[in-house]
Length: 96
Image (cartoon, rainbow, N blue to C red; front, side, top):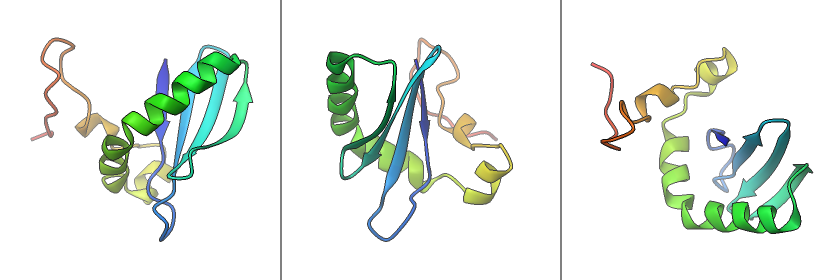
């Protein structure tokens, strides 16, 4: 499953999360934790995505703070700086 995170959108610190799994997708807005769109996920799966969004909201806010709206608009998310370099270590490293 892929997760796309928007930058912080307004003074209320609104962030949009888009979960994508093949041809299914869902969009959740935090901190309101509202489901904006569901294309193909079951009710139980949406409940799981909502819980995951709540449980990881601090991490999502920290990532959203690092997203530059202009580079995101140009198709460069900046997320490469946040991804672990290997699956085994899980350590977030910045590019040199």
